[in-house]
Length: 90
Image (tube, rainbow, N blue to C red):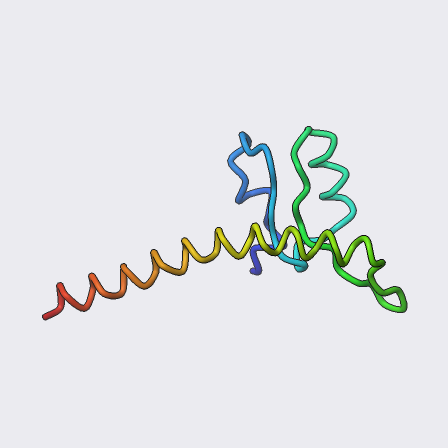
């Protein structure tokens, strides 16, 4: 099952902000997290026959910069784990 369908189960409850890609963009999640006082940092997704506004595109660019920095850390961690596995195997 895609994690976008079980997002609430992945949350620990003390988050102050939620960042994710377009797969997670749902109006119900946006309302829920805003009511809980969490920053909604999920990228906007264009809907059928309705593209993104210039404001949504600008917001996506800004949020993507934050996500890229976080994902870079996780990517580096995965590379280090692979190197460690190879070293242990030899």
